[in-house]
Image (cartoon, rainbow, N blue to C red; front, side):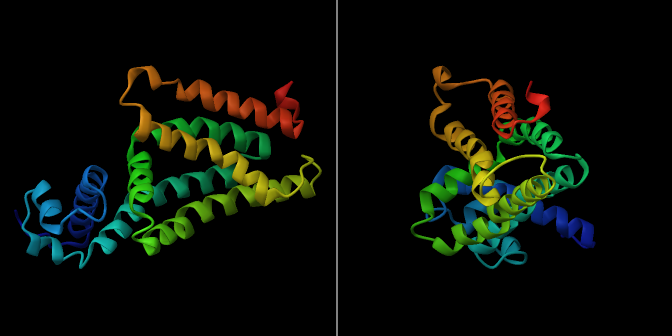
Length: 208
């Protein structure tokens, strides 16, 4: 394989390694995955991989940066541009099934569920960088809507967790049960129903 020389080529190479790492972590678990096997997936030597990443933990950070953080950024854009909590709910419930079907987030969920007790720092870093940031975005939207008397809720931070919960459920369901055809369900219909229920709970006119 030709050595990457430009910054763009190096970023692309890191992305390739991150994709291989996620697949290896997903199939074998974070603890059992080996650096040489990750490199072999994309036709590189272990030495070439170590030029970019010095540990599996560093590779997992790259997984988060490449496959989770772009979705956080998408959500932040939605929150900043949708205009009103109802529009944010519509945009989120449209975006959520797309993210789940892409497959990366369910794979990351499996890795964390399987190895979080043995590698708590990895799980904590994911929570802080991804989940806490998502919750902060939604909490901010709800606080703003509550202050403007657009919605009537109790604690926005707790409501944000209720909004996010079906996304986590769907990711976990996909990786645990959907090897069985009987376990499949319509993600678009599921999140559409979630949006309807949220609007009714918030007493938004769009739910009428």
